[in-house]
Amino acid sequence: KHGIGFSGETAQDLLAPLEAELERRRASDSEKQAEAKGFQDQVAKLQGEVAELRQAREEAEGRAAKLNLERQELEHKSGANALKLETKFRELELQKSQEVARARADADGFRRRMEAAEAAAADTEPDL
Image (cartoon, rainbow, N blue to C red; front, side, top):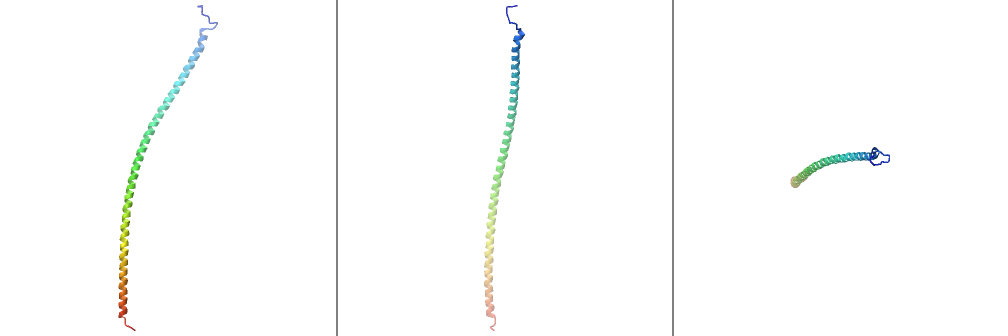
């Protein structure tokens, strides 16, 4: 009628492939948007986990520092106790060695007195 010839194709026939392509692209865009949303959700989740892990690490480092300080304090106390025990041991060792020396001196004195008493007794015995 208007001088435009479609050689037997109607406008509907010409638009069908274009509409199909448009629909395919819309579906593809929807898939990409869904995929992007999934990635965004995953990133948000991972960021939350990273924050939790950082907090847990800081708490663990705090506990480790506290335990290290306690260990150092115990080592210091242990060293001080060991020094006290060693000093006490040396004092007891000196005391006991002095007691042994006095006992030996007493024993030597008793032995000399005994020998002197035996000699005096031998002098006082009548000769038979």
